[in-house]
Image (cartoon, rainbow, N blue to C red; front, side, top):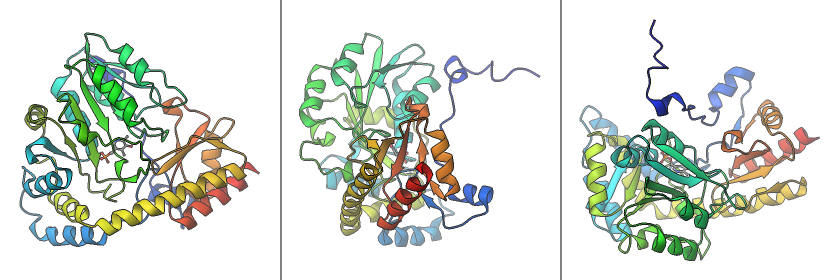
Length: 365
Ligand SMILES: *Cc1c(COP(=O)(O)O)cnc(C)c1O
């Protein structure tokens, strides 16, 4: 038989598949236990907004029809909310889809893509899938070093990815740091500002990428309904960009890359302002609860503005991850992000956070 791995493209040969958080059902099967707490994928512990659920249920009746491939209603609602034109918005099957569309739209073999050490794993994934070259730049205190990222740009660089805040570290860049960066980045280099956790951040110096679009036609802001809006399972995200950038994304996307349930639920979720506020408040108090608990256990952690915290186990984290699994608590190992001594825990309901902290205390003995 031919060696089809060796026959795959140069970039794909070097790719390692993305490792998602362990599903609850899988751990149930493996251990034969129930009452499992999953704090591994930065999901909204409140579940989906009731309004989104009602909209998705109503959309079931038309499941035999193709979705609106233009996403007219959701784009119109987003455009109004964000103060941009609907044609600046590109929808995706999750915002990961949009990240991939950017790569497909602009990357050829041997083009370069700049991002930070410890940044979201999907950036090297979409880069290497196009056989382009990933250029990870050393982080500073686990956060993006935007000065060093600027210095890493060459004439081969097509895209810079900035995760703000970053997953899995929870670090963020300030408005002034971002603006200094945008003022100096070459005008023909695309800057993808990944704001997947935008809705959670409560820092006054945290920048809103959308307000920078008018001054920077090379900027692409990516957001999602997977996190604060609680719709991870439906897969819907979007980008906001200049019209020309949106035109390219529209050319390379699949015609129906956002399904009809996702479109309906996202539109309703956008309207559920109370749910979003409750989600944010719950997260802010949960961050404090988990941070305090980690301190009491004598563990250091990276201060986070998102809905998760990466903490330092002070030794190899994998055995602690596995021991937590046996206690019925799923967190996320992040050795693949160059952080073998850290684990990432998502903020859950207060009782879930408590259960995690108790289990961690047990495991650490
Ligand atoms: C969760 C996450 C996303 C969003 O993924 P979806 O495809 O929208 O579910 C994007 N970027 C980062 C950094 C994330 O952590």
